[in-house]
Image (cartoon, rainbow over all chains, first blue to last red; front, side, top):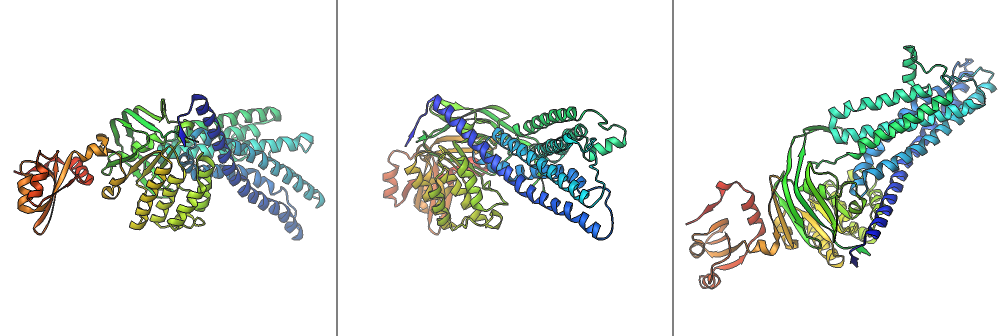
Length: 257
Length: 318
C-alpha cells in the first residue's frame, strides 16, 4: 500500500533516514579502524615486550623503547584506513540512499572513537614499556613528550596521540574525496592543505615526523604548556573536520564508462 | 506503508564535465573527456509508470539518471524529485535519496566484501528493503552471496545489481543498463521479475537499455535522448501511433508504401517488411488485407534508430 505523505511525515522520515545512514557508516568505518587497528596495536605490544627481552637476552641495553615507532606510525596508519574505508564505502553509500553529510558524520564519529581507542592503547603500551624497562633495570625515556614521567604525562601524551590520529584519519578521508571529485592533478594539489594540517597538529602536540623536521629548523613547539598544545591540537582537529566536510560535500560521482 | 510513487521534473538542465584524469580501484589511469552531457533538458517523468530511457552511447542517459539520485548535480537548471506536491531538489536531501534507488551497470557494490555484506549495507539504509525478495532473486539468478563481486562474472554482477534494484522497493527505481553481461534466460527472468514486482508494489521505474526490442513491452512512457537533448518524451501508445509496419509480397508492399517516409526495411526472399512513418491512410487496412499484406504496429527500435541516425540515411521512396 502506498500513500502521499504529509510534511510532518516527510520530516520524520528524513530524520530517521539520516540517523540510520550515520549509524551504518559509523559501524562500517569504525569496524575497519578498530579491527585492523587492533592488529596494529597487538603487533606493537609484541614488539614492545619482545624486542627489549631479545636485546636483554643478547646482553645489550636499549636507549629508547619501540613505542616511539608507534607514535610515528599510528597516525599514518589511521590516515591510510580513513582513505581506504571511504574509498570502499562512498559509492555504495550514495547508491544505497545515503547522503554526503551522513557519510561525513559517520566517518567523523568513527574517527573520534578510533582516536580515543588508539590514544588509550598508546598510553597503556607506554606504561607497559616503562614498567618493562624498569624491571630490566634500564633507564626509560619517552621521546618527544616534553614532559617528565609525572602524573599528567600519560594523559597528555595519550590525548595528543588520540587527537593526532583523528586529524590524520580526517585528512585521509578528505584526500580520497578530493581525488574522486577533482581527479589526479587537482586531487594531488589538494593534498597540500591536508599536509599543512598534519604539520600543525604535530606542532601542537609536539610529536611526529613533521615536528622533528621543524625542530631541526629551530621551529619546534618548545616549552609552551602542554595543555595549550592540546587546545591548539583540538583547533586543528576542528579545521581537519571542516576540510574533510568541504571535500565530501561537493563529491560528484561522474558516470563511468 | 510506502510513499506514493515518485515523479521528477527537470527544467532547462545543463550538465558539463571538465576533462579529468582519475585512478580506478585497480590502479589504472583513465582520462574522462570534457564535454556537455546534457544540454537544456526539460522533462517530466510521470509517477507510477515504467519509463524507457533510450539513447545512443554518450546521449546523456546515465548523466540524467544520476541527477535524479543525487550522484551529480546540474551545472545549470533545476531538478525536482518527489511524490505529489513534495517535489524537491535531490542533492543532499535524505527524503529523496532514501526513496530513489539508482542501479548502474557497475552495480555499485563493495568489491572487497562478500555480496552478502553489500546487501546488508543496502538493507540497513533502504527503508523498504525486502530481504526475502533479495534472497529469492539471488537464488533465481544463481548468485552465491558468499562470493566477492570481483569473483563473479559480468552477468552475475549485473544480477546482483538487479536484485538490489528490485529488493529496495524504492518509490523511484532506476535501472541503468543493468542487464549487461546477463545471458538471455537471465534477462527474461529479470524482465518478468520487474513486471511481477511492479504489479504487486506499484512504483516508478526508469529503465535504460540498448536492447530496445527486448524491453519495449515493459514501457508505458518513453524518453529518447540524443546528444544531450530530449528528442522525444511521450507515452508508448503515442509513440506507437507515429508509424506502422507493412509485411508481405514486395510489389504489394511497395505499392502501399509509395510516397511515405520509410523508417526501416527488411527483406527475406519475396517477402519484405517496411516500417512507415505516420498513421495509415483511411482504408489502408482494407487495402493491405486485399493485397495480402499484414499491417502491424511500429517497432520502437525502428523509430529509435530513425530518430537518432544522421539525416542522409533516411529516404522517402517514391
